[in-house]
Image (tube, rainbow, N blue to C red; front, top):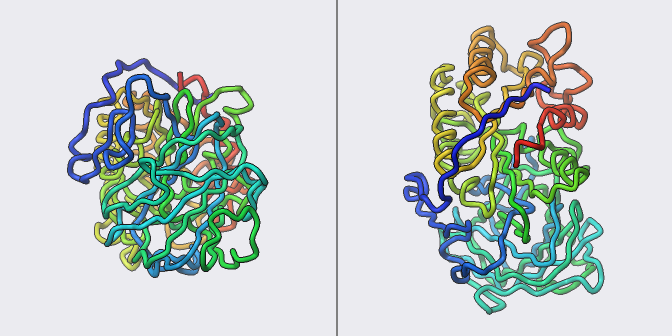
Length: 429
C-alpha cells in the first residue's frame, strides 16, 4: 500500500476563508447555505453529504460531452434526476444551486423518492419537499438553498430520484456538464408521478442539484479534474473513482458519505470557460462548505501543465511550471488544514499514452517533479499513488493497457478500481 498518514491538529469548522467571502457564498458552520430555510439548532441532526456534484456555468454541449439544456434552461418543464447515494439514513434533504444563474430561480415544487433506476420511482416512496415550510421557493442568483428535511428511509448505494418543477422560464441553468448519469425532462407538470412516459427527453448532465444530505458520520469529498469526474468509466455503471470508494466503505460498514466534486478539465490556477472556476477559487464552496466533510482527496495539476494553445478550454493561461502547480496545491492544503479537514494528495496519472496531442518530454519532466513532491514532500496528510497504480510495469511513463480507456489517458472501470484499492479507509477516522 503506497500510503502515508500523519496526524494534524483540528480547528473549528466555523472559520470562514477569504475565498468564501470573495465568492459571496456564505454558509453556516454546519455547511447549510445562509440562504436556506433557517439556522439549525445545537440539537439538530448532524448532517453529512451522501451525494454531491460540483456546479458550473452554462455551456453548450459538444462532441465530447453531448447535448445539454444549460444554455436554454427550462420553461414549463418537470426535471427528474436519479443519483446513487453513498450512505443511507432515515431523513433526507437536497441542495439546489443557482450560483451561476442570471435571474431568480422559481421552483414550483420538488419531490424525492427511492428509485429502481431509469426515470422510475418506487411506488409509495415519493415525498414532497418543502423549503422553509413552503412547497415552492425562489433561489436568488449566486445562492444555494437546502430543503427542509423529510422522513425517508434509504440504504447505502441505492438510487434516489429528485424531481423539480419549473413553471416559468429559468434562464440559463447552473449545471454539471459531464456525468455518467442521465437527467430526464417532461413538458408540463409531472412532479408527483412515479412512472410517466412524459419524460421523453434526456441528457447526460445534471442541473441545479448540488447535494443530497442524510444524517450520518461525515463525508469525504473527491476534488479535482476528469479523473475524479469519471471520464472513461462505463456510462450508468457507477464505475467512477468516487463510486468505487463508496462501495468499499459500504462493504466495510463505514457510514461515511462520498461526494464527487470533480470537473473534467479543471485547473488549479486559471478559470476555464469549459471546465469551471479554478480549483483554488472553488475549494471552499465545493469542499469545505459541504456538511460533515471530514476529508478531501485531491487530483489536480495535469491540465495546468499541458501546453495546448489552440484549445479554447485552456485559455487564459499557458502551461504552468511544476513549482506553480505545487504552490497552488499548498493553497488547498492550507485551506483544508484551517478547517481541520484531512487532505489527501493523488499523484498525476501517466499521460504519455494519450491518443491525442498531449505528451511532451517537458510535460513529463514537470509531471515527475509534481509527483515527487506529492509522494515525498510530507505536506499532504496522506498520498494515493494513482500514477504507480496505473503504470505499465515495463514502461512506467505509460499506463497499463488493461487499466486505460480508449483515449489512452483516462482510466477505465478496472483502472478506477485499481486506484480505489490504494486508498486506506482508515485515513477518514
